[in-house]
Image 1 (cartoon, rainbow, N blue to C red):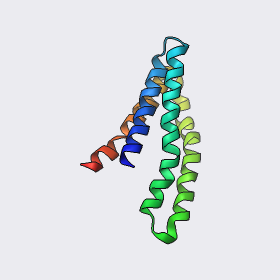
Image 2 (cartoon, rainbow, N blue to C red):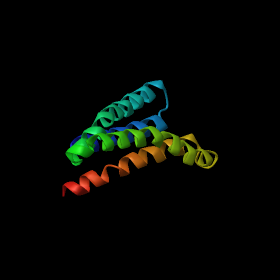
Image 3 (cartoon, rainbow, N blue to C red):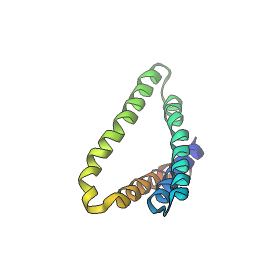
Image 4 (cartoon, one colour):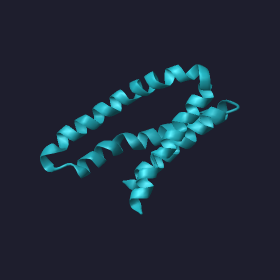
Length: 113
């Protein structure tokens, strides 16, 4: 699961960076596909990780909480990023999201050591 999360966040980071710097539609589509593949791997991995760490009687509650946070996170992220858009622009916002995805790899890499 560590490899799954690390790969998923890394794919999302690289995909967003490709999308941010895409000079044309071909590279933009490649970035979108890479980012989408990372998101596709991440979506089922979060509840699976929650089930692994939860006690038998608490699994349903924890999976529900994980799904709730995953549903609310984009709304909160957009709310925080919207005031920054005039300052950093679309390129900066995409790179910031990519950097956040890259930073989310660190706990999994550091925990392994």
